[in-house]
Length: 319
Length: 319
Image 1: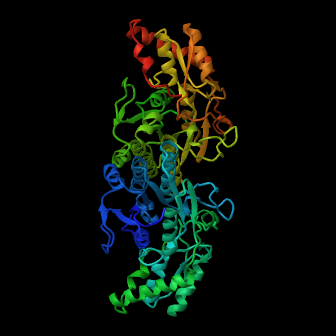
Image 2 (image 1 turned 45 degrees about the vertical axis):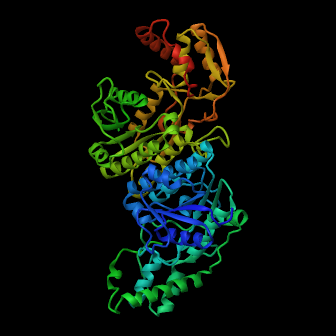
Image 3 (image 1 turned 30 degrees about the vertical axis):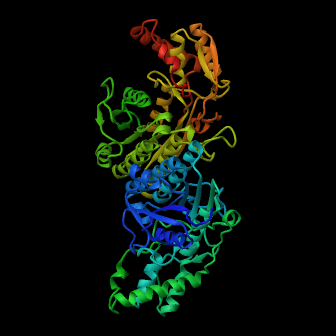
């Protein structure tokens, strides 16, 4: 199905990724409605302000939609770790409700899952046939959501696409990401602090690439696919630190490793290329540069040079 | 740890399996408290009447317990299919709460999971390394509970044992099981109705064997084990029908197969034998005979010969 006139509900539409995905779908001609606990910050997407745990509200929202792009829930690993019960309600009960309401409405679901469902890699690259053993609350709740959607597919004929996303980066990132921390340290003219040896890597995937994957999944009409969506580029934290340090001409400092970060995996997105024709288009250095430029402008507008000091004693950054 | 004085909380203690497990632990000298939405039918176990979704109530109940035997939640496949949102709350949010409260209290958790987490077998016999892809709401919620406990184990050091139970049978079974239906049909002097060809089998496991597995898991102090608990005996539905029909001298009739029954798997409990010294001790014919005898006495006490007719038009039985 093409974009024009296709009615899509985007859950989590006021969140970091949801805003990008909703805006991209709207630009492509989809008739987009948001669903979030908060209204959309810039008001560009009409938004149903409600809770995913409210089955009746989810039912009303899913009626007459061709597709539900389900990004809602707790997407912040730190929040899920600190409040697993909240994450279980939002991510598992919420996804069960989306599964039920979408089955009743005859809508397709495109679900935002994560590469973190795999857990420590048993073999690499990790494709979609790799077993899932996350061992942390965030991944466990996202994996549970996949299983609830699959149950609805097997028992009720729900059409589903599951996108297991690499670590997304782009404008509007949360302040506890490694990008935001490094940028804040550099702009405050302080050393960039790398925890551990910085050799751990991530396949950082730009929000525009992530958004395109959701759009392609809405357009393609495939059913039952589970697809990794991650850039092929592996970037170490040390490389990221060097890029930021070079740009702002600040040194790099090393601090003890922090526990709880997922070990790096080499994620293959070959299936997404085959099924959706998707591959990441934004080279990391370009994406990072654009991100820092946008951030610099915002920072200059809101900071005096002496600000930013408080960042230095804050918690280590989330990758 | 031995039974004497060890403080155990049994969730779901007023349910079919919970009553057996709680009674068995008490007989073995454990200091048993129940936790259930309903008081225990016979009042033999002091019971905290509360909801697993109430984290504060679960926290209070888990304090000062050495072990939590967690059977609470929706254990009826039909109820989970009809009300997936209820099953998600009870089985996933409930288990997250048990995981959190037990981690805080320093208690071990012995969790009642199910062979149905595996889904259609990819190879047989199915041991614990077999992948999990349930494809139905009941199995998905029980699997999600396993992953939440594992997250608490990896992140908070929670000690856990997961028991993946075969289909349990014994006194007090729900009226929608194939046992209860066949017995009701036979006692009403009507044909026993087998749906499909009756070739599908189950490793029916007696409640006394299931209870012993929980007791051994409480006593053994192992951590991190995931163990199948199923009788080695495979019994087809046709065999079960023949045993019941022979005892009551009624014929067998065949009806169209019913959708939704899990396909049979050959489940290996070799790991439970190795780790806990567990194997099923009750031969199926003996266990069935005792079950029917108990049921006959109850039936005679409450029925006139013309009763029971309504069972014939009821829904097909759950295996």
